[in-house]
Image (cartoon, rainbow, N blue to C red; front, top):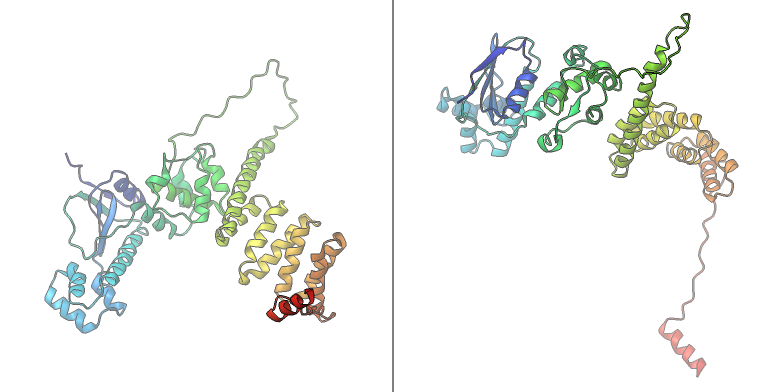
Length: 425
């Protein structure tokens, strides 16, 4: 028995929710979205998008190829005249005539289908209808888009908004990952910030705490909304009941004049969450740095310094990661200074900062930190050598002469062995 036709209004049921249902139920058929002057058709097979088309002029594959200069005006008009009204097969006709390469058509079809689908994410009103149909669409290219990835990409492109906080509902609820998200949704590639919030969906951290750990509440709510819409996380219908207060055998009544200490109760768990999350992000960032993924490490380390700004280690490691990009010089210097303000005697931070300043032609500033290094650890040869390089760069010292090694007389030559043998005889 085939499922019943399904229709409604986008003002009531959002596009991500519709796509989530199509994906979750693995439905095969055609989703039609329509509003005044425009109609979109998305065909799915077992919940995955296979092709998309639009009624809007300029959003057809022939028009796209012509606009991007991939086919000439004359060839396009000739193919269009021979094809008549069946423009859905125009791309294949151009390929069969050798006017467009198949790989070019495939790439442009993927680009066009994404453009069509992502444009629908901005619709606030309109009608939708899903018709189950096992037949194959008459399309130029059979696509392999993942619906789950499309949902995340579509929401990612939308601006941050407080509207997503309302969609989350009760923020005391605690989201958790689905049974095996890597296996079921491995095609969904999360950005570092998205992966960071996803890692907090462990069933014990509330939506409220996760949102507070995002750069902004609106940004965090949008990420969580995307994770829910694509099915990576699930949220219970109701928040867990608050824990029962401890029973004391002989509770002493609190003085009436003393107000309850609500601030301590509110901030203690938040601090625990912040420090735990910062530590986890730091460990992952060090792994990324070891694999030379400095951009990913920077994203995580920036979260660390935001969550625990009093930690000199987080500032120092962020400075080391930022130093890999020559365009981030001032950001690097800022983090080195913060690390040394919090830990003035840290020799490795002082030495790396001096080397960085010297590499940026700021020898006078580098000399100041090299002098501190030499004062604190004069037994370390590297510190004196670093100070010398700074003074040479400033022009107040001459570079140390490079010793020329004396030639080594070899007795391994033929003549040498001959005379040595004669002397021995």
